Structure formats: structure tokens, C-alpha cells
Image: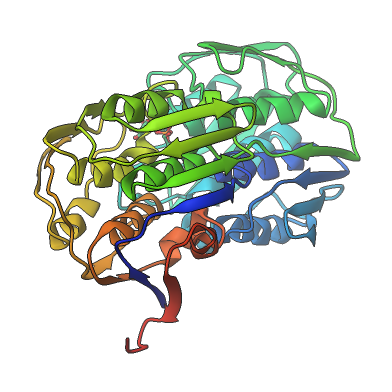
Length: 423
Ligand code: EPZ
């Protein structure tokens, strides 16, 4: 296991380039199963979640080559099974996207039941609601989800909860089903739109992604030998915007989509940060102690839950009291205990955290509990006086590509060490 050694009192400055979105790349890689041939994906982040999903696809008979650092060539001409290995898929939540693709291509599929995780129970009832509406039977006994159908039929599906995963999974399942499937009360995140854009780029007929209603006109087959580039990562971009603000820095963020960041940009400006957006860049500068704000996490275009913990760092050093209400996940404040170890003054009650801003944080040993909390703790350690050791950084590597290298480019003193290595 590894840890980060991070020196504080850092003021980030310079330029950083944003990679492809993890939460778009994962479902799009699964979606390539719907193509009976080769698909090339560019701007794919080099992170462990992608590695894990590719390992699972190889078990299904798919051939995958990472021909360049951010390019995957995926050949799904022949599948040798519809049963993904339960041990691999049950450990890795996004493997449930394979169900949608396997249903779409072969009318059946089986993956391990995804567990909950640090942030909450993470049910899949809405995924199943859609699959059953499309004519599938779903068996969730014995630690797996086994889906099969005699004949898939177009359907109208009204989700009870706005769910990124359920929205995407049912787009995948319906893409090749004859007739018109309509999804209501859907997620509108940029990564949902990117999945629909990918499928349309290979011949699908999907209308309305990014709105409250998605219409899927099933097509007979998808085009082979196409190339698609993954959308820039909204959450990685937001992580660096907040890091620039927290360290009173001056950072130019490149290869991003400013309008995807609108809810965060509005909050940063409200707190006193200077944010200037132009084409595919965002320039963030801050040279004063910020005033606090209140935040409630919501489905897109609301404030993203995945930026809640980095924002908590900003509120912990603001000049006053700020409040965060986490409305998406039931337990996404584990990072608060770690910030309080650094000298923050935060109290949590159910889904609300109250941040009484302090002037200084002080370095200490801290522990990541999930990938976004881990990224937030890097920001806190960069702000703190003295040095910090951040453990459990494997969580961070799941969703951020060599994050320490990008922070080093901005002037941070951060080293990746073996956990046992003495300072
Ligand atoms: C995706 O998770 C992201 N993961 C999460 O990012 C993100 O936090 C989440 O969307 C919300 O934006 C990926 O895309 C791989 P949901 P997902 O289904 O799809 C409830 C990260 O850090 N729900 O939109 O699992 C659920 O309990 C990760 O990159 C049901 O009730 O999230 C939650 O309260 C962490 N039934 C809400 O919906 C269901 O069948 C939103 O969950 C499904 C979800």
C-alpha cells in the first residue's frame, strides 16, 4: 500500500490539463459490447477503475489494447460468455453497466451484486425496474444479478429516483430494442449525455439526453470501426478549481467544458474567488480569505455530490460559518473527522455538516475513505501548516490519473511513498 507525503503552505500556480471523465468512460467501454466489431476510444483516463473494467471485459471474450496512454481499441466481435466473473464484478460497482450492454446485445447477462460502499447503500432497484419493463426477468439471489429475456420489448419507464446508473444502464439495454423506449425522470449529468453521444456516433438513435426525457428508437445494429473521444472530466476539473481557490492560487485549467462547471463556478464567485471561463479553459485566482456559503448537493445541473468533500475543505477555512446538506448519498461526510484532525471545526448531524471556518489547518496523518474524500484531503494538506501523510490513496487512484503529478506541475510538494516508509 502507498501513501502521499504532502507539504503545506502551498500556493498552486500554473496550468493543468483535464483528462477524460471516469464516469463517462466506464459506461462507454461497457457500451462497446453492443458493437459486433472494433471501436476505438480516445481520451480514456489511465486509472484503476478502467483497468478493472477492461479485465472483466477480457473475461467475456472482448479483446482490448491500450495502444497509447489514453486510447483503447476494443474488439467485441465475439463474446464467449454472458456471465462476468462474480468475484471481480461484485468488488467493482460500475460493472453493473455490463448488464445493460449484455441485455442489449444478447438478451441476457450476469454480474456479481455490487456492494454498498463508504458513501451509502447504493441500491439498484431502478436499474431492475427498467430491465423488467423491457421484458427481462431479474434474479438477485446468491450474490448475483442474473437478467434474461425471451423477447425484449420497447417500454415507457418512469424512474422513481433520478439515478445516473439506472438511466445509463437502461439506455444501453434499449439501444437495439425494436420500437421506441421512453425514459422519464432521468439523470442529466454530462457523462449521461456523453454515453448517448457515443451511441449515436456509432449509429444509435437516442434523443433528449440532458433533458428530463430520453427517447430511444431501437436500431438493428451499430457501426464498427468507429472512433470516439471521451468528454473531459467535470469532477476532476472541479477538484482543481477548488484546490486553486483553497491555496489562494492562480491556476489555468485546460481541456475542460466551462458550462459543465456552472453550479461550482457560481458558488466560488459567491465566496469571493475570481473565475474566468473561455472556450475550453477556466482561470481560477484567489488572493483573500473567502466568505462562506451554503450548499445542497443535487442531481445535475445542481451542485454535484462528487465535489461535496473538496468544497468542505474550502468551507473549513472560510471566514464564517457555512453549511453543506448532502441530499444524494446517506453517508458522505467521513472526511470531516479527518479535517477535524487538521484543526477544522466541523460538526455533522445526519445529512448536514456545519463548518465553522478556522484561520489555519495543521498537518497530521489522515486517511482517505473514498476517492473524492481522498482528493479533498490532498487539498486540505496543501493548505495546512507543516506536512501530512495521507493513507489509503488507492481510493484516489481509482478516479484520478497520477494526481500527484498534476499537483506537482502546479508547484505542490507531494510524494508517493510506500506506507511503511519513514519520513
Ligand atoms: C454515479 O453513481 C457516480 N458513479 C457517482 O460518482 C456519483 O456520486 C453518482 O452517480 C451521483 O452523481 C459513476 O458514475 C461510476 P445514482 P450511481 O444511481 O450511478 C439512489 C464518484 O466519486 N438510487 O445516480 O451509483 C442512490 O441511492 C462516484 O465518481 C436508488 O435509490 O449513483 C442515490 O441516493 C461516487 N436506486 C441516488 O439514487 C437505484 O437503483 C443517486 O444514485 C439507483 C440509485
